[in-house]
Length: 191
Image (cartoon, rainbow, N blue to C red; front, side, top):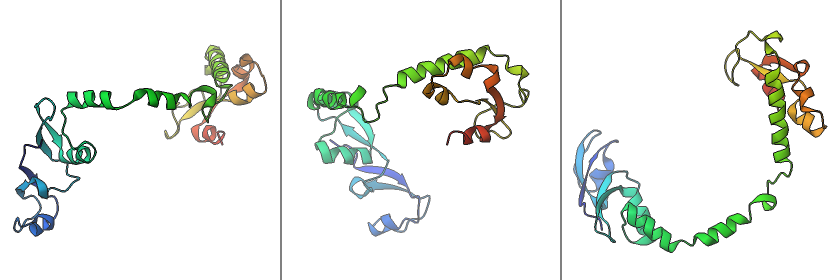
């Protein structure tokens, strides 16, 4: 149940909305005590309510109250709303519908994903073993895409190419397959 009858609001525009409702001339910055039924339904003003289940008094934004009124026609505090949802919602049906999208039945299923991830991990391990300081441009600024003047470590033969062509991770991660290039050049290889 809504307890508040009036809500204090500050006019943020020319006040014509409240002027048409009979609040007199308003201008931006004026503070008004507005009747609850005159608040716009999307207002974020806090309104005092009493829980219809336990009677606890709480505050909630007016737009949230209007939204839940359309669905439930009741007002619940946080604790009672969790309890209500737990009783009403059939979570087993949700779990069943989600189970149809797991594993091989998922539309984006990639059976080689775990193999590719393991391959990338092995390439990265090999890359970390290499003496990167001997590469050209190794003394330049390193950074992410978008950083002005940043260079990135590049695998000349990419990890994806190595995986698809069964090339050993030791070859893809070897110093002979590594170089530092500007991030824009490295990014352009992705397409």
